[in-house]
Length: 220
Image 1: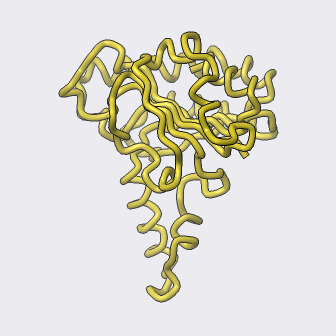
Image 2: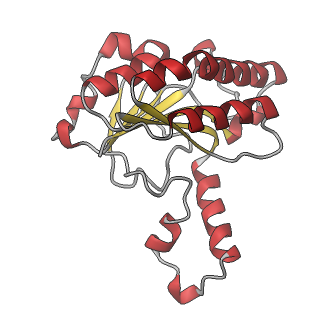
């Protein structure tokens, strides 16, 4: 993830969203869930100061419900607070995230806000997504030889360009550098890139490298 983040910084990407833990991942065996929780929480603790010094703002997309350990929630809160004023790049971590869940939560908020049916449109729904201030990704990169989007940024990627690669997410940045990001028609103006390596489903197609997070980039 860090290699990808620094790669994004080096070519001027302004927003990178990484898929760290999906809503479907809770269906995996307990040991795998524990591994993913510890991996993501530990990485955040170890690297947040380094990212802060590079001007990276850390945000999170996803549900912060009872299933997420309090320690993880505290680490998320601390990382966001430490980096909230940084402007070089926004690293948006999709944690306990699902594209369908995000849309459901937005609709639930519309109901809670008592928005009349004749006032509900794309603008009203988008305003209630997890981070409506972030631009939609221009580029979505699916790694590891898969050809599906695995419930990732379903609303946001409606007009994104898709790139598929056989490279696995753990080695994506080192092996591919910025080539996929520059495959857009105008990469310097790209609003975002999404890289997707592992299957965020329930684990039925389990492989060792699927335990590492997925990622997404956005640039304006």
